[in-house]
Length: 280
Image 1: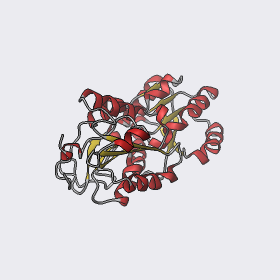
Image 2: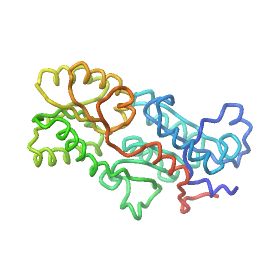
Image 3: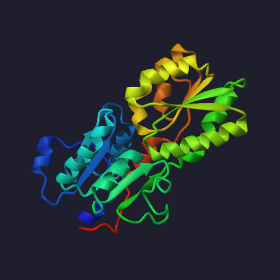
Image 4: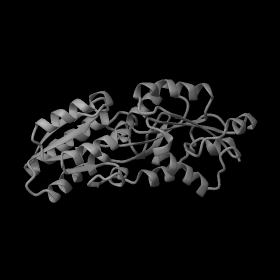
């Protein structure tokens, strides 16, 4: 297979150290970064399945270098730097913050991303013509986020005041919250936003408990993924109807979720190409 054919491929299982050492110098290298851990990473699982579907074997046809931040967003730039030092041919970046960090780190290595609104976040010029070294898929989560409040209102007809958990450091989520404010007004609801960074979480729960709120919306910032067990536990303790952006929350006992299927989207991304990329 030609090197250029791999320039836009993303995903796959991590190659073992021995496999990585025995690869020929021309074997394509893919770098993948996720804020959480590998065990709960449905995105990476989708990528691995997508590559398998297309007949690619990790360690034989390509090398995958995976890096996981274990919930610490501050580690992301250093992990990306590690991958660039390894001379990866492409970076796979789930989520807006990781993609922004990758764009700051390189203007030449192709980046395949999956984010909520890449145009609104300033990552690409347009969906049709992204430009620069970035391509990928958009969730358009600003559009489907309206359903969170609609479904919560349908489940709790007397709902009046809703807590929203968000990451104020994510520009995509800032726009999602703006959309939620508009939808809340139309539904006759009042929303109160609370930060969901790991360092803020327990203080946020105390504030929600004291605010007499009747429902909870969890936004789809990637950093919240690892916090889901504690969030689901808190909602159950407070008997607070909640809607989540990740189906794994329902598997953990959450009331309901509404979102895109991250597994299937990254399964599709396994075949993404950026033919205009340099090299080959």
